[in-house]
Length: 67
Image 1 (cartoon, rainbow, N blue to C red):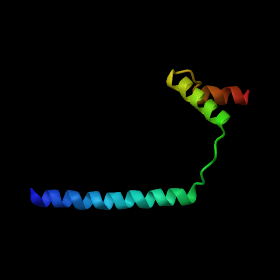
Image 2: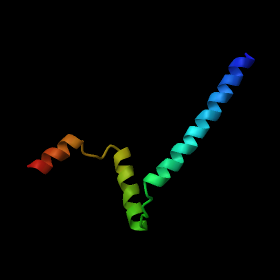
Image 3: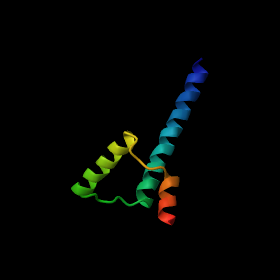
Image 4: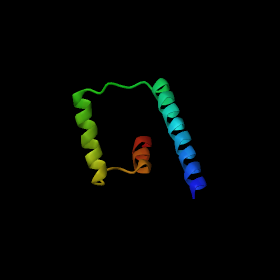
């Protein structure tokens, strides 16, 4: 049982290291965008609509766009 615990601990340490590396990589590759209060309000409203199911399927939106 001690061997299993030790191995799990080693894997966890490696995983944490990988996660930190990925976070640094993400931060260096994807610049953060500043969002205005108005944009944030709109994004929250859109999220609420989507959670309520008030959205249009992608296929339907693409059909309307092509017409």
